[in-house]
Every structure is written in C-alpha cells, then in structure tokens.
Image 1 (tube, rainbow, N blue to C red):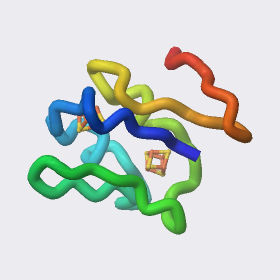
Image 2: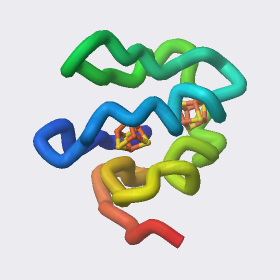
Image 3: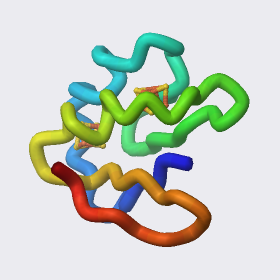
Length: 65
Ligand code: SF4
Ligand code: SF4
C-alpha cells in the first residue's frame, strides 16, 4: 500500500497527474489514496518532489528511489 505523510505534503498535485488509476484524491488541503483503485504501481511515489509518498509493503517502510 502507499502511505502518505499528509503533514509534509504541499498539495502540488504532481502525484495526481501521474496516477494511471485516478486513485489519488486531492481536495484543497486533503489528500488520500483510494485503496480499492490503487495497483501499487509506485508512479506516484517517484513523482513526488518532496518524498511525501512511501510504498509500504506489509507494514515495512521502504525508502524512495
Ligand atoms: S501506486 Fe500507482 S495506482 Fe496507486 S496511487 Fe500511486 S500512481 Fe496511483
Ligand atoms: S506529489 Fe507529493 S507533495 Fe505533491 S500532492 Fe502528491 S504527495 Fe503531495
């Protein structure tokens, strides 16, 4: 699953634009991943300029590439 650190997000929208599944909802100062749509492709993680998104595999945090 993708984990967001919302207190660090500046709501730039870069991740929303790259998501092929439209699985990221960004409304004003509120961002969330719609888990039913997310395929864990990781494109959003790579797109975030300030590394707010992390891929979380079985609860184990992995650093961004
Ligand atoms: S991992 Fe892929 S499908 Fe899931 S929210 Fe990010 S870009 Fe969208
Ligand atoms: S790309 Fe990063 S900073 Fe921009 S809206 Fe997405 S999570 Fe927030």
